[in-house]
Length: 135
Image 1 (cartoon, rainbow, N blue to C red):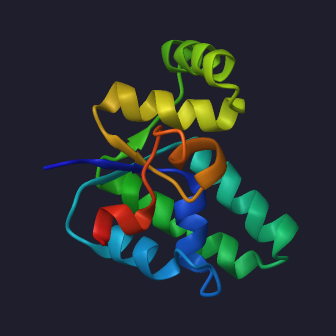
Image 2 (tube, rainbow, N blue to C red; image 1 turned 30 degrees about the vertical axis):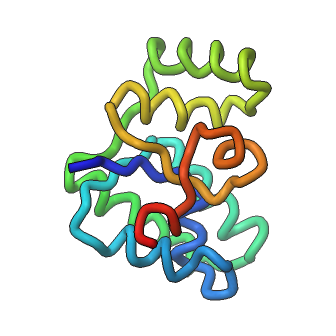
């Protein structure tokens, strides 16, 4: 069975009913397939919910989703090895350090990266969209 490593964009899409990926993100995160994420997701979802949305309740709910993934054993912690791999990926593919960290984490975990970031990750084959997983 495939483990799906979700980045923060998938977690945020699950919360945002106006996001076109919302239904697929919900199905993925509420389904029976194993899901993982990077510890960076705690920071990213909180930042977006507070700074962009101005919604502290959404921030709490989103951290709860990340905590549930952690409780299921799916939280990957950044360490020197993972961040070294991320730095190489960022240089090679022109990615942000954040995006590269998710790519590196998925590779290290033998998982498939799921992202709503079509431009930087999905279109270049580094991730699949939530719709490709549940569609």
